[in-house]
Length: 337
Image (cartoon, rainbow, N blue to C red):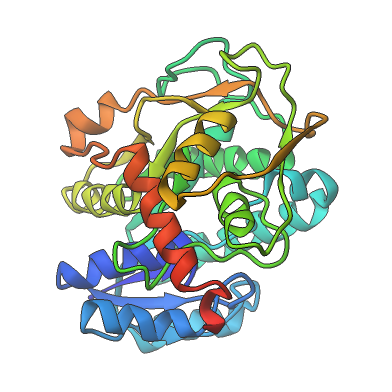
C-alpha cells in the first residue's frame, strides 16, 4: 500500500518524500513539473537510497490521474499540488480558483471511487486572514485577504463537509506558516520559477547576485520595526509534521486540524539580518509600497500539534538561514547545476 504525494517534486513535497522513504513508506509522486524539476527525483533517490515511482501528470487531466489508482494500491494521499503565491493570486484569481479547487475535487472524487480514506491537506495560515491577535490558535475565526488564501479556506470547508457524511474518512488539515530552509545536504531546496514571490528565495537570489536587491513591501505596519512579521519554519520540521499527521490518521482520527509553526514571529528586517550573518555579506534592499493581500503580523500557537502529534519545530532561525544559503550557494542556477 502506497502513499501518493501530489506535488511531490516541489519544495515541501520533496523534503516530505525523503522522510517518508526513510521511514520505509512506499511512495508515489504525481507532479506536472510546472514549478519543479525532474532532477528532483534523482536527488531524492541520491539522498534516500530509494527511487519513488513518478508520474508526470497534471491532476486536471482526470483520466490520466485515475490511471495512477488503477495501477497502484494507494492507502493515503498527501496533497501539496497547487498554485501558491499570494501576490500572483491577486493578479490571477481565476487561474488560482480553477487550478487549486478543481484539482482537489478531482482528487477527492477519485479517493471516493477507489476507497482511499486517509488525506493530508496542505493548507495555510492565510485562512486566518488578518488576525486580531497573535499567537494564532486553530479555533480562531477564519477569513481571507487574497484569492490564494480563499482557495485554501474553500478546500478546508469542502473537507469539513465530506467528513460529516463519511465517518470512515480521516483528514488532516495542516495550516503552514512560512516554510524556509533546505535539506542539510544542500542538494534539494526551494527553486521557484522566475522572480520569487516568497521572502527567503528572494533574499538568497540577491545574496548570490541573481537579483540586484530585495524589495521590502511596506515599513509602516504596527510591528517592532514597521515591516511584516511572520512565523518562519524549517521545511524539514514541516515535513516531519506530515509524517506525524499520517500516523494520526491511520489510527482513525477523523478530521483533525493543526497549526505548524515555531510560535515565534520575525520581521522582514530580522530575516535580512539573520541571512546576512549566514552568508557573510550584506543584503541590499529598498522599501517599497505595501503589497496587496499582505497583513502586518502572523505567527502560530502550535501547542495542539505538540500535544496530539508529539510534534514541535526543532530548528532555529540561524539553522534555517544556514541551510537556505548552503542550498543556494551550492546550486546558484537551481537544479540546472
